[in-house]
Image (cartoon, rainbow, N blue to C red; front, side, top):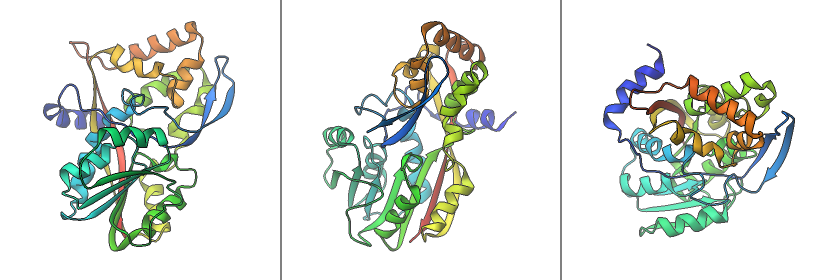
Length: 304
């Protein structure tokens, strides 16, 4: 039995069929491929135009990762946290609920995400601001813990982002982050991209697994060490990704946002139908029609 099946069998008994859904997002430059298979590039102010748009795609699994991440950090209560690239607040909300924080500050470059999270996360002791991960508007040593969830691979210059995270952490404070393993451990995307590339090799240009070098343990650890973070540790976090049926899996790819949905919606209907049916044939479907996959994130932590 392979590692994913082992992870799945250990996880599924404790996870509800419909997980709570939250989202993350950051500004990026995306590569797209048109319906004829020609590679294109298009700049986007944000991967997602609203907080709810990302939720049915990969963002819905972010809270499951956040819980495991915070349990791994195991920080004492009463600390001041900064969530860099807070998106719609999945990690921030988990910090508030699980870490007994004294204060949580979330920052994101997307005004739309900040507006969304201000409306949906209204706890006392939390605030959300618009700002750039590469130029954090805080004093040196302002926070006990500086964290980031599912974001660093979207920061244009991630070494600057982690250096800024380290700068605003106090001496002895925690600097930590996690990113999806797009290359091998994010099964819902691997089924999509492996099939897309088999049908049209030009689709490889948009595959996040090839365009996200930080989504591996060694580069992620090196990034933290290069920013002056000490005692760096990296681990994998596996979470189950359960879909009620194939439509539940496939419909988020029709949103036309982010690389995989962008690619799907760039195809004409016959090509998109061929992609859809080839993916359907390759997915592990249970007797009840559900699809049970596993997503892996890589998490890094260290000391300022």
